[in-house]
Length: 215
Image 1 (cartoon, rainbow, N blue to C red):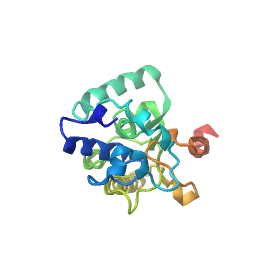
Image 2 (tube, rainbow, N blue to C red):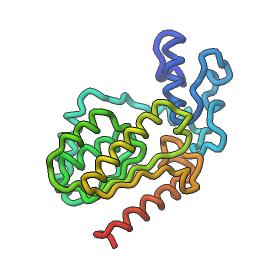
Image 3 (tube, one colour):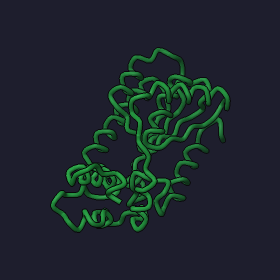
C-alpha cells in the first residue's frame, strides 16, 4: 500500500503514510514499525470510518491538484449555469469550491453545505472583498478528532469560524456544526463514508428542510 503513494526512499514512504492516516487516526511516527506495517493501528478509539478497508481506500487516491483552481472554478460556473437554481453540497476541497462558488455564482445557488472544507486565508479575503448582493445560507459540518488532536484541521476549523462570523455580519444565515457537540462521535474526514454516514446525512437533511424556501 505504501508503495502506491511512496517515493524511492523510506522518508518519502513515511510522509505519504502520515498523509494517508492523518484524517483517520493519530499521526504515524517514523519509528513505529507496527503502524508502518499497518496504518489501521493508528486509528482513533471509536473511529466510525471502516478502518478495515483503509488500505483499499488508499489505493483509490488520485493526485489532488491545488494549482489550477481557476480552471475548476470556471468549470463549476459553467455547470451551475447549465443546472440552474440548486443546493450545493461539497466535501473537503469540493466544499471549498462550493463556498467560493456561492460568491462567484450566487444567483444559481440557494444554499451551501460544506463538509470539512479546508477554508484558507484566500477564501476569507475573497469574502472580505466581496461587494456583491445577498449570499445564500451556509452549513459547515465537521467531524470528530479535530480540536486538540489535529493541528492542520484545527486551523481550518478556526478559519471556518472566522468565515461564519463574516457571513453573519453580512446578514447571511450560517451554521457551523461540530458533530460531537450534538452527540455524534467518531467521524473521520470522510464523514459520508463513515459507518454512521446516514445519521450525518439526516442532520444535513434536517438543516436543508429548515430553510424557509424548502418548508
